Picture 1: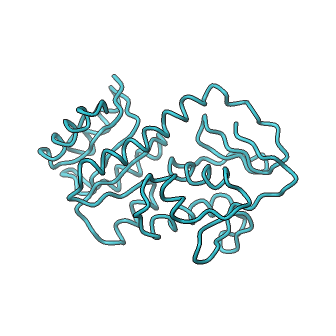
Picture 2: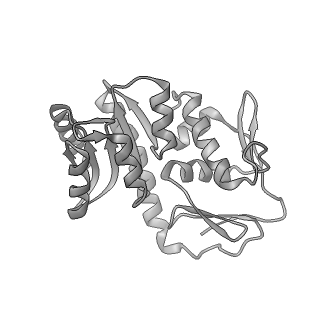
Length: 239
């Protein structure tokens, strides 16, 4: 059976309440209370998105995230009572797409989940047009069907939020994109810390740039935002 959302949280009462609230708004949701429960669930079912706690009874959500990332690129949103910036940075650097601190507002959490589910649906809808626009003079092509980038003929796998961020910058290529616009278009929220964005930009540079410390494509416009600079000779492309 397929679900929109799987919650992995050992606070059973909170997980159950969150799942019930999501169902009220037509987001099909189930929950499990352990890391092993998560993998057992995914052997029998599929999910579009995972809400993942860090402190689990049988281990760490960080380990669960790393293992999930070996097998899937679905959005992973951390939900945790741990408040430190170090935890946020670790969560994002190992493949998390967002970090929501407990106690969370159910309505705000639902809004974040819906933003990610909408993007998943858009990717599914465009999957059939995978080969469209593949002929391009640009060295960079985005492939929505596989959530990857092709740079100079080399395919590069991206995580969900990395792809969403690159896609936003690509759509506005060769122009400055302000941070607030990136937060709104990629995360669906203008009230994110710069740290969240910086981590994702750094990850993209590590994957796309020959020298991430001296980027030639993904450039910082200090105090304003970022710009994806591509050769003007090509129109670019999205597969």
